[in-house]
Image (cartoon, rainbow, N blue to C red; front, side, top):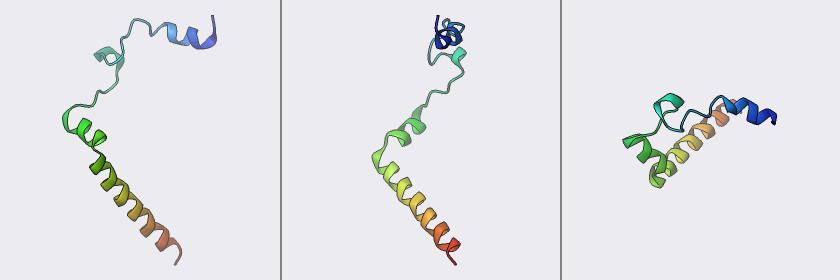
Length: 60
């Protein structure tokens, strides 16, 4: 038995995305914002603008 298999063996009874797995499943608005290309483009522009301002401040 490989080391990776041995570590995962105790998790065999837990199904992915079940309440027992402890993972959060995106719902509603969160899922929309993660998949909306227009929103992602807007966030990309905002974050890049913030980075440009931060870099400009560090050069003075």
